[in-house]
Image 1 (cartoon, rainbow, N blue to C red):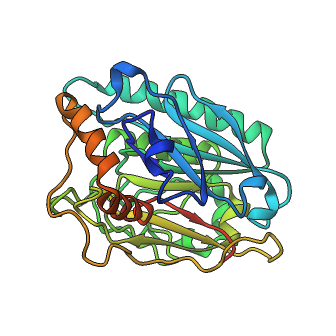
Image 2: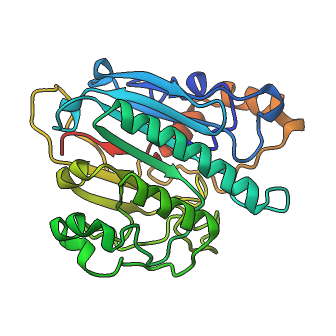
Length: 304
C-alpha cells in the first residue's frame, strides 16, 4: 500500500515496473494533484487478484476498502481490507478537524465490521500512541486470551497525540488489535523518519479483528530508503494454507543495487510537464525508481 501518491496517474506510472500487480486507488481532485496528504493506492499481486475486489471508496476521508476472500488469510468468510491515510494536525487543521476525520473513520470501520467477520486496516494515521493500551479491564476476556496484552505495550517512541488517543478509542470499541508494540517483531519502532533520517515517530499502524491476530506471524518494520520515502514500511506476515497459487519468492530487500537517485524528488507544480517528459524518456531511471517504490510499499505478504 502507498499513501500520498499525489497523482491520478499512479496506474500508468507504475505499469512498467509493477506490471505484475493490480492497482486499486482513490480518485484525486485535479486541484489537489501534487499536494501532500493526497492519494492512497493498494497493489495486489496478480497471483491473488482474483480473490480481491473493491468494496467501498470513501468520499469523506482518504480510505479505500477491498473485499478479500477469507482463504487468502486462512480465515472463514470474507475480509474487509482498509487502506487509510488520515492527515495530521497542522496550522490549517485544528483538533476538531482531527476529531472529525477519526469520526468518519470510525463510522467506516463500524460499517465494515457489520458486513464482514474479519477486518484488517492499515495505513498512516498520523497517530502517536506511546505505550498506551487500547484495552481496559472491561476487555478482560481478550486480555486473558492474549499474553501480549498482559504487559505494557512495547514502544520506542514515547509521544502521544490527540490522533493517537482517538485511534485507541476506535480500537477499544471494535474491538481491534493494534499490532504496534505487541511483539511478533514489532517493538514499537519508528516508522516516520523523514527524508534525511532526522525524525523518529510511530504514525503508521495496523489494526485487525482478534481472530486475525492469532494468524499473524510477524509485523516487521523495514528500513527506509530516505531518498524515496520518508516512512519505513511495515510488513505483516500471516499463517495461511497453500493452494492459492501465490508467488512465494518475494524479495525482501532493496533492489536498486546502488542505482537510486542522489537527490530527493520534490513536487513542483510548475515543473509538472518537464517531470512527466523526464519519466517518459528516462527508461532506465524510471525502472529503478519504480523498483525502489515497490520495496517501500506498506505491504501485506500472503502465504508466508
